[in-house]
Length: 123
Image 1: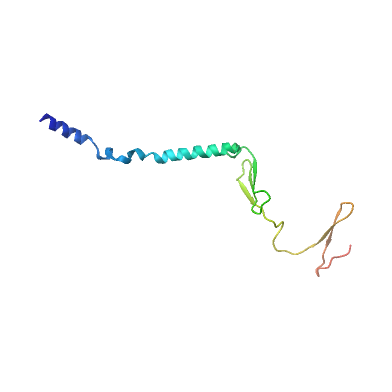
Image 2: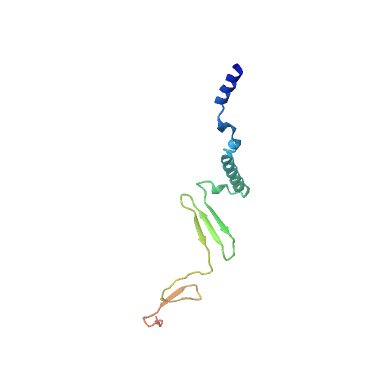
């Protein structure tokens, strides 16, 4: 009779959740996060760019130099990161011509404004 009581007592102490085979996988997400952060740090260090992680460093990166989709990434101390998308257009938009500028042989620049009809005025 003692054996039956002993088995009953140990049977009450065992929890059905302890027998779950997926209990060992519970921390898999944490392991994956640690691995991804370590991979990110290794990637930054392999490109010799620890300045990206420093808050008091200024850095400028030119992505695809000379190509049509060239980008300039600027990180300055205390400022948000700025991305400049470069295009072939130097200046664009709508407006009206105000006159013409001429460079003389000695290097001086002369501006000749247009009158209301669009003709250049003589000065």
